[in-house]
Each structure stands twice: as structure tokens, then as C-alpha cells.
Image 1 (cartoon, rainbow, N blue to C red):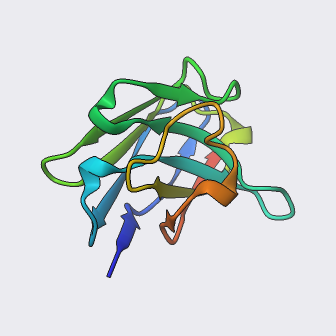
Image 2 (image 1 turned 45 degrees about the horizontal axis):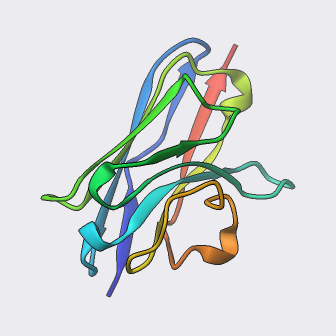
Length: 128
């Protein structure tokens, strides 16, 4: 059974830092492009970032570029999202996701139809 489990979210102040962790099991993690989405109630799910097989390529949405950093540890099947200088508009439910096997990380990452597996989501709240 494939499982993607995000770490517990948090409530932080604007400008602060938060790291999300996603633990993946039930598949060969190294064979998947993985990344993050977020969703605000009433809005479409937004593709934020992905990292390719072998960590050779990363994609960031304009809304988070320069503030968020994605990384992966294939040895442990873990995906990370470091979020710096958080803004109120970053408040959302954050989901980790996997595409594959041998899926791509590219500018098409935000297309939810290409995602094979999803985490259950974790709430991040940023207050001013």
C-alpha cells in the first residue's frame, strides 16, 4: 500500500520559517518525481514545487520562488519543503504528491491530472 504522510502543520507568524516533511512508503521512492501542492478552500489546488529523480531538476511556482526550497532523501524515502519568509497568503493545506514511476518534474507539475499519489494534507497557517 502506497502511503504519503506529511508532518503535522503549524501556525506561525509572517516572516517566520517552517519545514514540512513527507514520508513515503510502498513504492520505490527514487523512481518517482515528487513535490508539493497547496489548496485554499474554494480555490484550485496549486502546484508549488517538484524535484526530479536524482534531484537533478527542481521546479518552483512564481508564488514561492526564492522563498521555498525542496529536497529529497532517497535513502529514507523522505521529501522536504523548507519555507522561509512566510506570508499570510501562504496559509493553506499543503499536500505532498508523487508522479511515476519515472514521472517527470517539469513546468507541467501543477497539472493535478498527472499525479499518481497524494498525501492526506497538512494545515499551515500564517498570521500577521
